[in-house]
Length: 56
Length: 402
Image (cartoon, rainbow over all chains, first blue to last red; front, side, top):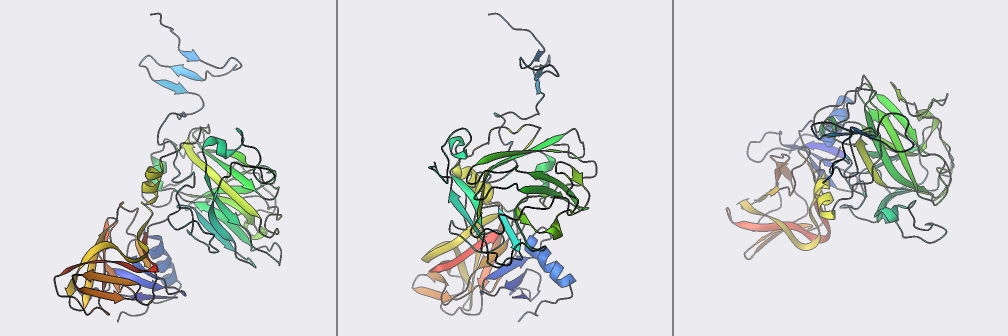
């Protein structure tokens, strides 16, 4: 299981969504929306001292 | 034509406050609460009849939102995983579905229920073991329900049908926060394999805080089992708000220690007022639309199941904007599985197949744009094409659950 930042192909910025891949290779694109519960879970993960993998 | 003139109407056996008060302006106040059985949209629960299961109807041995829409199963401390599933409310024959009558949900129009089936918990009931069924309404919906949630004289009523394969009492609670507030309720001792209707009347509480947003108002949890880490040793009574965790009594462990035990619920209704009115059934299409505010299948289970259109942004990128059929509670997470040639883009004589999508741009509650820019090679810049799942096992869905 891993979080990874994604570059917007137009701007090169990592501000559109976060990629999360679980142990069964199911992929989630998580928006930076504070009302999104997956994003809230990501923020908790970061607050625990973790860092997402850098974008390609 | 004669006219009956009066201000109060009450039941013959009533010696207290009138059941119905007629005002000179024609308005009517009901002592039992502001809701009656004929008031539409009084049920604050989406999919309380458990009829919608967009994720599928097969048993799933996982936690989370995996079966019936809007209903979540959580558990931990298990030796064998538990299943969640949408199952039929059978018309009934002994011994498992006792004769249909007014005491059976089938007689009230229920045909589906949410079932949790226990695994084999060989190590017994541990203090940290738990399993709970959860539902979270939106804060803005509770704010507009008519329940004045900070007034102890204002009531919210929860009602539901429940059936267990083992005889015991079960607890549940409303959890609001933060700060955390807990209101416990119980089913009473259930007879095995027998449906029972449970009602809990929830008063307002002065320090409750419920956001007027699309965030969760609170969670409603029905508890097949809680270990003692999550209960209160002094067994404080249910039916009262407490300002901390662990304020439901210790649980009987019979269900948890019975292999393959089941608990089923349906007909969940939450409404302003102190009376549990008859369940407000909805047409399937209406309930499905309400569920899609939280979850929507975009593409699933088909070879060349083209559910949306896009374009070759360049010779090495296919991109598609998908407008969700129903606006979401929040910008949703887009979820898809991956596998060899699970997805494809097709236009004219060109077919680009690929294993996964690369990313999503501009996600909003209304739409999002997905693209692949690492395994596309066949298209012409600016040409349009169909896209979607291209394998019976592939899927794309979006989720904005609470």
